[in-house]
Image (tube, rainbow, N blue to C red; front, side, top):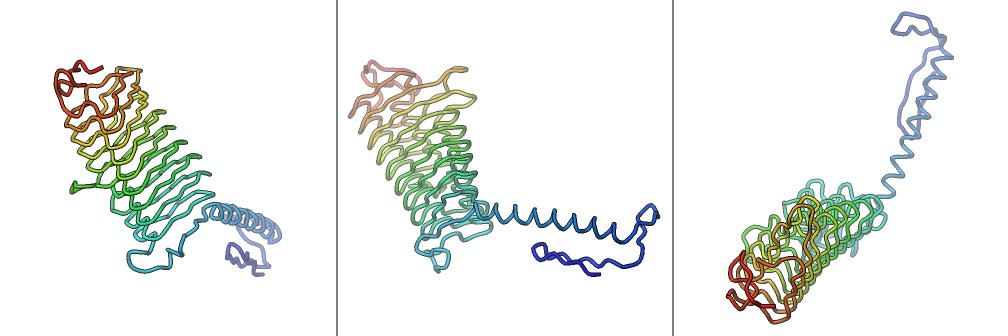
Length: 306
């Protein structure tokens, strides 16, 4: 007798004679058939579960980008777009290019949109974005600099065009790495967060960051310090914090956080607003240099600017 499971592609020969088990006890062939039939049903159930799992992982390739060639093709590289667990995932042309890119975007019933030519590079860009019911919206030509784990565990991430890129830096690693982990919320405008570590580690631990257009351009310009359950809430306007460490948020005291607001066209000098404390509000067109009458005298000393 030959038993064959169509779904599991498993075939088993069963002799009509008696069969010995590993204890050398005699078992009738009918009992063997019942046992193998139950095994086949279990295998088929696992196949159904596997099929359902992959149904949930369906991805929409805009402009049929998965079949395009050259720079327009999406999901190119070792394990690129593998493991995208999302009920609603769309990827446009030229995106998710590089080893491990776009893995787990909006994993576990989340949703994700990736625009054109985004999440490109070899640093696992956009990996684990908005996991666990999260939402990730990534614009065009963005996340070329390590947007991994953004929004992990229920976060909300929205990144505009030409943001989270190396900018003038030779390395894109860590530009927007780890931002928004553990239920964080991050909204970044266009042409922002450019340079090594420019917007790294922001909005961790329920943090909430909004960064306008053309802001946070510079080495660790707006790097966050929200470690160990230290929540940071920051509002940064347009054309602000464009210099090395300009708005690098210091690590809050234990079990505390920061709430900081920076207006448009402000804090555009090295360390210009690095000394800010929780509750500080920087008006528009302010604190674009260091000095006694500015926000900061130096990176750790506050000036007289209200």
